Image (cartoon, rainbow, N blue to C red; front, side):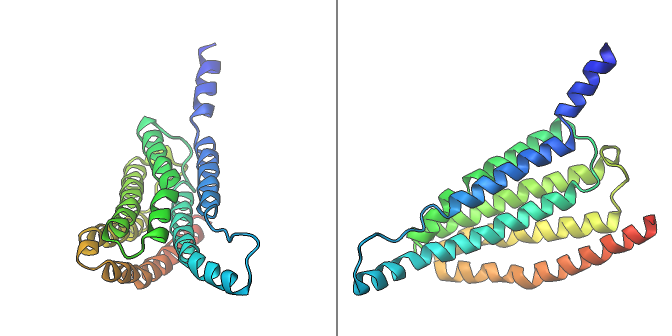
Amino acid sequence: MVNDVRRVRDDEGSAPRLLALSDGVFAIAMTLLALDITVPDGLDSAGFAHALGEVMPKVWAYALSLVVIAAFWRGQYQLFHSVRDVDGTVIRLVLLSLGLVALMPFPTTLLAEYPDLPQAVAIYSGAVAAMGAVQLTLAVVVWKRPWLGTSPLPDAIARNDVADLGATVLVFAAAVPLAFVSPTGAKLWWLVLVPVRFVTGKRGKRLREAAQRFRA
């Protein structure tokens, strides 16, 4: 009887169920990003051209947030690839992460409506930095608790993942005060992540492929 109850509780808190919940929240957040992208009906050519110009900042903010959310979804998927069991700490961190993901449409709207205001850029930067900080903490917890996975995460892969997330946190956290000096400069500063993520992404792919060959 005790074993049966234990199995039910483990299943309810298993990694697959947590990932299923995460997929749903990420999908809803991505969908909500696009709700503000509309053009009024019944416009003439001049009005349509003007409305199209007005909506382009929303399209840009949508595209940016879509890339950001997709990157965090992919990172979480890779993180849980070899995780079999989850404990209370992992569940709480995932739920906190999902709460921040679900909140992303709000700073995205601020950035779309007020792209030149320092407060809007700072809030957006802070939101991404917060998501990165939670996922960074989650990565360290999973790394340091090898008993949660089917096999221990190689240190080289874990360090690369931590460096990747750490760079994201540092860049967006630094953009918060920078936004009050120059909102445009803060947005350009985000581009520092492009080469950094490219390098860490390539290295992570190479390390994971090597680890798979070693297991085989």
